[in-house]
Image 1 (cartoon, rainbow, N blue to C red):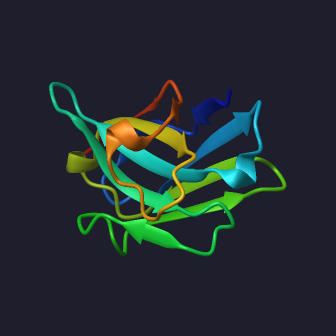
Image 2 (tube, rainbow, N blue to C red; image 1 turned 120 degrees about the vertical axis):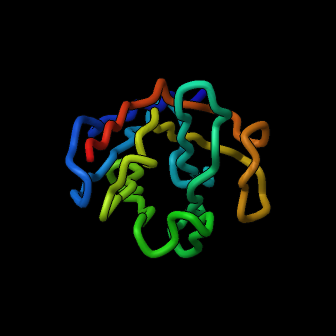
Length: 125
């Protein structure tokens, strides 16, 4: 059983940068492919980015490619999402997730096994 806890959300201005963290515990963190998702009010949970267990492979949805960077530090059991040039459309609850699937990338919500509780990001224009 893996427990995930996100942090780093908050209220920022348009154009600002923000880094989210996701601390993992209770499992072998490096063995899991990790992903970031977000969910705006009244919307579904959308895939943003995924990273392989060893951190070598990354994959992004086109809408955040070039603005968001996913990374991980397996020594610290921590996943990150660096977000640059934020705009109002980035306002959402952000979730990290872990999957034991052996293929990459993993982009579907239902293919992730463990989820954090989410952290809110609000971008004011």
